Image 1 (cartoon, rainbow, N blue to C red):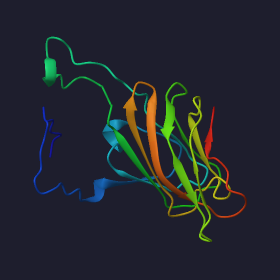
Image 2 (cartoon, helix red, strand yellow):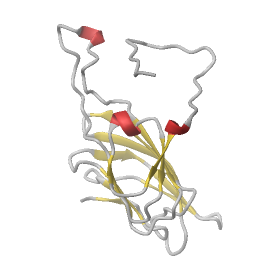
Image 3 (cartoon, helix red, strand yellow):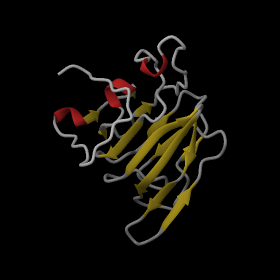
Length: 172
């Protein structure tokens, strides 16, 4: 079936059901993500030291000629990337383009009940998972959404293996 675009808003009184083999994508090597191929899908990270680069946030307005039906507009505000760590991280990174930054928080949890939330600094554009202090063992989950010019909202939690809990946020 071809892609369909709605001028919206779209209302569902009974929910949406996403099913089928295209709803999960296994990332097995360094990957530059795109909205068309990766947004809204469950991204299974299967590269322990992979580098997964988010697309540059685009906040373009609709053209004055096309108005609300400017389907060629590359604006990607609202695009969400859902990561599930399937293969435990050893040096896995989720990166922006170096201009976009992270906002929000990541909770790191340990199976002994310890947990700690980390908030990115104003210049943080990398999330690093080692499987140890910074989290990233199998079962970790992150959702990252383009919310504003230069701002990716990150939330959910990472599971930690060993060592003292440490921030997964860094600046490239």
